[in-house]
Amino acid sequence: MTNAAFTPRVFSGIQPSGGLTLGNYLGALKRFVDMQDAGKYDCVYCLVDLHAITVWQEPEKLRANTRELAAFFIACGIDPEKSILFNQSQVPAHSQLAWIFNTVARMGWMGRMTQWKDKAGKNSENASLGLFAYPALMAADILLYHATHVPVGEDQKQHLELTRDVAAKFNHDYGVDFFPITEPVIEGPATRVMSLRDGTKKMSKSDPSDMSRINMSDDADKIAQKFRKARTDSEPLPGNYDELKERPAARNLVDIFAALSGRTQADIMTEVEGMQWGTFKPLLADLAVDKLSPISTEMTRLLSDPAEIDRILGKGADRADSIATPILEKTYELVGMVSSRG
Ligand code: AMP
Ligand code: TRP
Image (tube, rainbow, N blue to C red; front, side, top):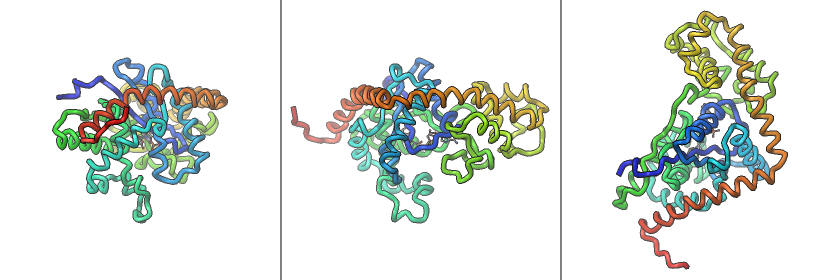
């Protein structure tokens, strides 16, 4: 059986661990909205609170960050009537399928994950068991919906390969074609938005320098200042994108411009050829303010009514549950669990 036998369905998730950046917007949210609006897929979007607690989260902050992330999704254009939007912990089947996958995935697979190595660091003895098992929960998130497509940033590629390995091993071990072999969707000009201070490092909420990133909470002045001060080289912009190959900081600003404007890099290059940074950076800053300000204004409005956000997440969880529960039950049956309750 190929994936053609499955309903085309998108699943993706983001951790509510605070500090949303332009990287999250361009690498994830904007693309989630595009996939929703393409009208070709069922879309399921999840605030992965169970993943967030694999490293310590202050309980009240986690709750606030979850609502803030929900507001971010909606403000960016996710329509909770069209797409399913919910937080992971409200659908117990995620944890239940993750347990099954803990018995499918191998220690060696998990140990090779670069995110595990980076996050656990030298002191892996003291990292949580959940952080090690993180990719099995992620595989459960995706496969619980028989998702066929998963849009993510470049940094999640390895986890998606592991998801495919889990699906293939389960199907093989139990002699079935039950789980799809999910396609990662890592496309567009901004699958890896880089730091504004160092074009070879990913833009990240954990970078000690606030100037390295655009936060979704930055106001217009801050955004303009950060782009003005972004590190570049002293060469003007070429007319051909390929010529930026060895100029990562310059390429990053062009990528951001292309992604924000919904155009290709090649298209942008024809317009900016020969331009100096002193001219390009203000154009980029204006474009960014134009696109990001309405999102943050809408987020503030949504967050003034947390009960409404909770209602939306509750409804999303009910809809998610109705897809997930039959798939979990079928999985239990395939594994050989006795089921005798009414
Ligand atoms: P995180 O906030 O790191 O959990 O990431 C949530 C989503 O945003 C994932 O799909 C990431 O791949 C994406 N993402 C985070 N940072 C970046 C970045 N600098 N460039 C592109 N995508 C990113
Ligand atoms: N690991 C992802 C990240 O840190 C978040 C995530 C959890 C996810 N489950 C997922 C992404 C399922 C895509 C699909 O960004």
